[in-house]
Length: 193
Image (cartoon, rainbow, N blue to C red; front, side):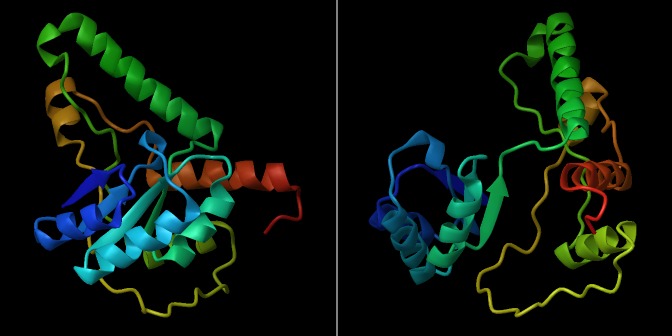
């Protein structure tokens, strides 16, 4: 279980970690001021209590910030962007579905719903699946296994959306990956492997 923190003050990160109530702290940089040095300090403070860290990154300048956050010690990076048209379609469908349900049922106003395919898939399994779909099963990831305090299981439960709204994902993981791979190949050109 995790919590969100917008404050970059390291003593607050250490305090939250010392409660022992959370497996990880997610920095939500869009809600408060911070600088690149704060990334280092937040991670050092969380490391004192063996608490994992995650940062949510928006599109620009995502690559630089992701590299800097990893260098600072963050254990996880969440990219907030939607990249492909299929991802946009699935999200729009979910939100339109929710809006229609909210018009019909005022009791769900103010409720929080997760929209997810609920797959629990290990990163290595996902890498293998992408390699197979790209016909590049020959590529092997380099796993150093040096991360401490890794979040073992993290996924969204859409149970509430299923049960109360009757929602289900519009795309399977394989369908989404096939379409995403096709999009990247088109974007980077025919020779993209």
